[in-house]
Every structure is written in structure tokens, then in C-alpha cells.
Image (cartoon, rainbow, N blue to C red; front, side):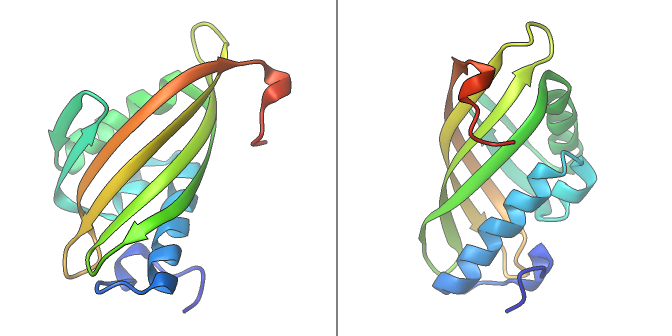
Length: 142
């Protein structure tokens, strides 16, 4: 399987290799900080829980992502495959960003649980994370 496959061409049931590629494709999409690119991996009615926010659908996801990246400048993310089943993937992630208002560098650690439809689009995303301040000299991701 080629490493540049589109989100929707990797379909369940997942193998270790296809789950890994799904995670790396998501990482690459999120690192573009382009909501239109990120949305290509999600079903039109995808349900999200992001920390304490609950919403669904492309319009709400796009609004969330725009708001996120207006606040989280210089965002850089790494995702790691944690576990998978036939149509689900769990991910550990870490990212760094600079707060747009305070210019404080932050690191975020968390987990996501994903569920996919038969076309390989994510239909459910459940995310938990914690943020903590770091010094610019402590950054891992450049």
C-alpha cells in the first residue's frame, strides 16, 4: 500500500499496515491546517467529541477547525497507532502550538478513538487531551 493513499481508499477491515497508514494520512492532513483537506477523511454526518465539545457534520467540523487554528499557531502534530479492530482505530497523539493571544508555547497530549464507515471515512471521533505550557526551547516538533 502506498503511503500517499487518500483517506477513503483505505477501508475496513483494517490490518496493522492499513491502520498505520490511516493514522499517518490523518497526521499529514491535520498538519496542513487546512479544514478542507482534513474534512476529506470524515463522513458528512461524522460525530465528534473534542474534549467537552460535542458536534456533528462537516459544517460544524470546519467551524471548529478554523477556530482551533486561529488560536493554535504554528501547530505541529504527531499521531501514533495505539490499537485497531475491523473498523476502529485508537491513536495516541502529541502536538505543540503557540497561543495566538499570549504567545505561550503549549504541548498537548491525548488519545482519540475513531470509528469508520464501509467507505473508509471516519463516522465517529472521540478525543480527550491535556495541555501544558512549555518554553520555546523545549519544543520537540519544528
